[in-house]
Image (cartoon, one colour):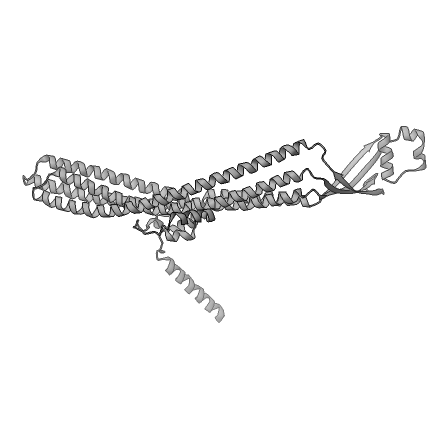
Length: 455
């Protein structure tokens, strides 16, 4: 009784503790780039498609191995007839022939007989000039090629996720810049109104400032729309919706990356790009296909056998027999095999050309990505210097306008230059990050583990 009471008290305390804990709002964490990449590799439909392609090639590899196994079959048949040959053979197989069965009348016009037969039969190719072995090797190479292509598909998903995620950070900075522009335009309109009321400016200044504020408000609305579109693009890259509490991400910040040299990037691409590895494996697989087509001209040795029982009824007695043999097959008119060999050689030539073309294209992609990132780094330096210069120019011109030494048009012109310099700076920061990710994608080193170098 006492133990039961203690158990009830313990359960009550546990329930109170759980209810107390759940009464507080659970802490939610913003979505990081690593988490976004992990989700995209798990949920993106393109990833499922590439996995299905790998599974298909693995199934083809297992199918190629079935040629090494014997073929066995079981058949059950029920027949009835009075065909003289059928009746004669059936009675022999049933081991039920009697002396009167040799009478001419019984041989020429026999009575119908029933036959219930059970037959086990099989065959096995003992030697096929190594055709099956070449087909198995070809299938295994295609599995490895498909797996490498799937890896490259995963890298493409990672890049799209990085692009969508960084687009969100860039869009957030654009919203911040436009919000600042609205505040600046609001203060400028208030300043112009005060100066008009004091008789220090004309009404045109106030109208110009109001029009400038309306334009800045429109820019803010457009920037907010682009931010929502960027979130939608990230959701499409991930393959699922993102909760509102996970959208409080860190804004875009300037980063420095170690670019290395172009020769190093090209060397990494030759060594690391999965699509290049996939083409090399396809070339080996097609070479195995040519050898397989050649081996089809060789002789084949097959074995076969069967065991059969025959009886007149389901419960009746009957006889059984077996048969076994070995067969040598040689194709003396292999016209179709010649065409198959020609097609295999054409396929090999096509894969070799595709591999050479892909090698040139990959080098071009790495070179383009390298110089794009180099240009983005230089543009970032220029944009950073431009911001400080324009900010100081705007501060001086506002002081001159307040003192009546500058016009509203001059102030708006410099304010527009400041807005453009801010936009160009954050665009340069965004391009610096994205071109670095593109460089890693081009040289084949963009993986979930390397995402930490980007964020």
